[in-house]
Image (tube, rainbow, N blue to C red; front, side, top):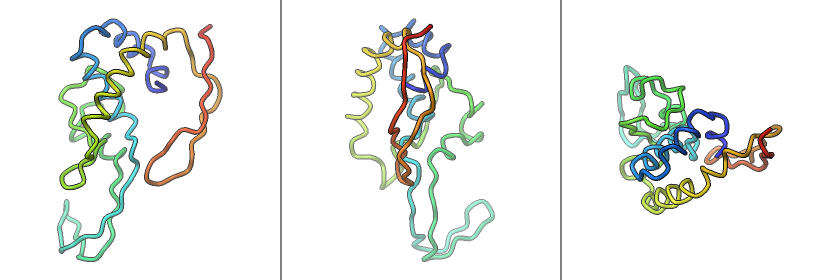
Length: 151
């Protein structure tokens, strides 16, 4: 919701297309890429690995930063632009490989249903004041964000 309120043009575009299931699905995928609900995971390298000219030795710890991966310019043209029409959108919001989220289908279904109902209501709202988050390295939940009627 915050991403859409911060990018009114994208909220307007979503509301124009709210009856198109494909458009809502594409918007949800961009919201997931943009917000990256999981911030990071730590992993232990199991065998010596070379990655882009750097050697990671077995036993070393590696931090996987999802927001960084979801802004990789090699994967996403204009990665710092919020674009609900972005396709393809192969983000890592739900992880990858053996650590891919088991609840991915339910989460996507819930988000599509939520935004179909809530997006039209957002037009009458605006963000008000500072956002506060709960400090956490795995996920970054929002503790507080006021909204007020749009002036």
